[in-house]
Image 1 (cartoon, rainbow, N blue to C red):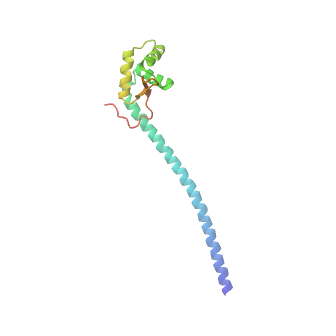
Image 2: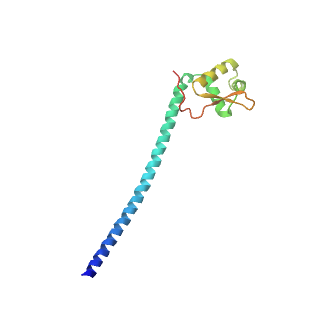
Amino acid sequence: MSGDREESLEERLRSLAERIERLEVRLREESLVLDEVLRELRLLRDVSLIGASIMRAAHRVKDFRYDDISRHIIDALVRVGPMNISQLTKILRDVRGTASRRIISEKVKRLSALGVLEETRGKRGEKRYRVKDGLEGHRSST
């Protein structure tokens, strides 16, 4: 009887070990699925944040939707990098055929007030302007 009991216990232990092994396999599979779900949720969050940022930027610049000079200013700063008013004026004259320093200065100030551009300093301390990174958290136009 004690031999039968030992075999029964041994059989039960093997059965438990197999069940534990199957559970471990399922947990690993579930963990992989959970990791994938978390990656997809992070991606969805990132896409949502980017979309929200684009919506805020579009809201800020809606007044400039048909403003050719402002579009050219932003385009030039994106392509070339930080520039001062004189440099912007020269590039816009090349692109558009005409450009006034006064008008460009006004447009740059307006774009800065809307949070689209920011002022930086050049190597010799001159004012330069660049397109703001990220655009999140900046005040919107009213």
